[in-house]
Length: 212
Image (cartoon, rainbow, N blue to C red; front, side, top):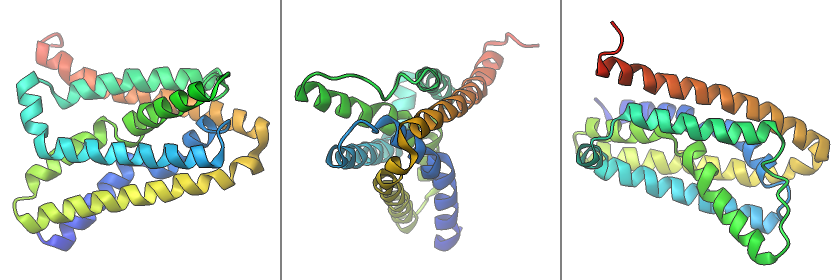
């Protein structure tokens, strides 16, 4: 496989799995109560954490899976559960209107949001983690491995730019618009959660020999 062909495969697969255009509305609704400066820090931290996790799994994914006897299907099930919980909170409009009485609480909440659910599992979910592991195995030469790392970074830079630009859209939507957007995205996230959950559960059940 040529470098260009491999690069196109890496870009299209990661861009589809990370789906920065889909993450942007979630980021907008979750950070509606934060200042632009805090929102920027959350976006940078979320993307940085996602990059570290993807690189970590790309380098050591197979070893980690074998050591803990973990499968990609198990990751999909867990990711589906997390997705569903996040989506349910969004559907109830509870996710972004968390009242915080002190600067310490604001800082803590922002840090939590950056890691979960933004970095994990919205940006770096079971699909992108599995993709990183599989593509690293497919990258049989050093140039291909460098292409994989470079394209991963490039996709995450695009994600970061979209998150940073989303702050300009929030005032246009207003409070009502943000709530509507949050509920719509919550429903979509819950649907994605169901797909993730059963995509992982099916193979696990078959492996146990429950289905005939």
